[in-house]
Length: 113
Length: 113
Image 1 (tube, each protein chain N blue to C red):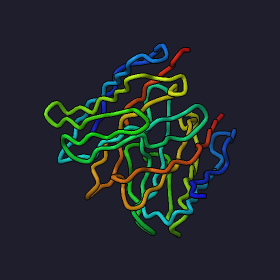
Image 2: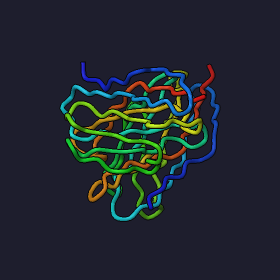
Image 3: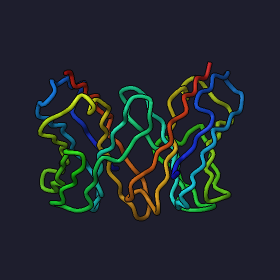
């Protein structure tokens, strides 16, 4: 079945540091890939998505590229802010016969001033 | 305002007492789904629905029931709750299927004693 593996956390960075959060996946066919973010006490929000190989999703300074050859979708940001502190989830969807969404375990990011 | 509304937000109850968590969306979305979020496990899909009267199991359906009699509502039913169902639950919806961005509710925290 489908699965998503995220790097272990938590991650603590200083403001303006570079961020990379690793995500790899296992899936049949050609899944769509997502990053969702969860701020404290809230539901998840879509951060970015990519639907096919070599697509780059981007939003709010975050980027991720769909790499089919390495089955990866790593999240990056060049300069994090305190307001980026949240939990980040990588997810994949294999819509079709069964439209299921599979999430990674999530990683907590804390950015200190 | 486009939103997914869950009720209740918090509930403490006892083993075996049937409960229902309601979910309603006002965006005319076809696809709705339920997740549970547990520490160290991320989000896991319980059930999903592609349209009215069409529901299917996610990855962890045991102990849960759902129904989709109307497009806007997708209640989650625990017929005989047990302590291992203590968790944070999220309802989500999207325009068509799991490939589209999901709109999440704010969550329901259930404690089963």
